[in-house]
Length: 100
Image: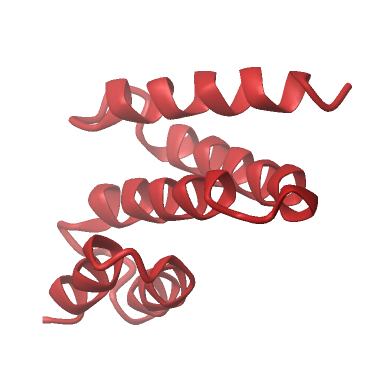
């Protein structure tokens, strides 16, 4: 139930709350069968929050999302959502290069 609630926040585009809910879920259910999905949706939430942010917040939030991607890849090199995560990571990389 907690996973579904967190996912609803994500789908309602309430990304900050979704990220907190996913974090809480990982603390409460570290061995869950939904762990990969939680890590992916946490990454996607931060990414979508970043690209929809005010310009002065975008870089910082993209860097946070990049960290979430690294955490996802640490545990799921060949997961069912790896391809989607890599697509997001590539876009994050391209967007961050604009700030160099």
